[in-house]
Length: 346
Image (cartoon, rainbow, N blue to C red; front, side, top):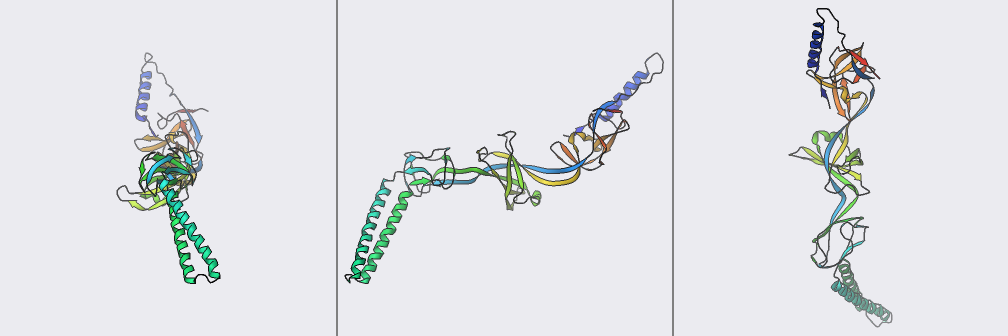
């Protein structure tokens, strides 16, 4: 952070010490040489400087679903418990399906009889033993029986709840022996191979964002780890009270480290400055007149006001006040005053 120097106090104390030294020695004049402050310097250079802004966001699963049974019944078996990872189509739970199975078998048998009658009647029609009308009626009966069989089979299959996509069983709301009503929540199911982070962005910054641009995600739960993501969605609606726009950032999450509901920090590029004057942030001090730096010139510290355009990662972008190759004091500048003697050390 910027540091405030105590220049006037230090100058006053130095002057007081010189006066005290001059008054000693029984009237003999003595000259006290001004001490030199040790400093380190580096030349002012130009390079690229990227400004970022950081916002808080909430992790959501890339795909989330609350799974329900489409038919009712008593839960007979849990096939994938909470925390289990399953593939699309794998069974998760099964109801007591005795009744559905019986209805399926009955419909299947009726369809088999209707089909057999129709096929036998077709042979009779070729010999003139049955009318075209009667054969058509038998065909429609067969089709109706097949439709009833297809419906019974579907009802029976729906007694088994299956994963709609690759993912993980999160929270289960019912247990074995509970009655599962049709469309009542049974489990929460998540795909955590990738996540999206919902981030409210101030409306004044939305113009600088585009779908596809990179972002990085940091979570307090995983110190030192950085997750790479991209902007996947920009809402077209501004929150009237917060004056923000919701932005979705999508990130890979192969080991499931980022969990739904987790609060994370999202960093996105604000602006890139090419060929800019960039210096260590610690080289900038705050004075009564504003922000300044100290330069080394002729064995003296020279104070120079500067305009700081941005700060990031312990570096400062200088918009005005410094020229390339000037000798910038980067260490030992805390208590310097303009014109103070310095000694440059390696």
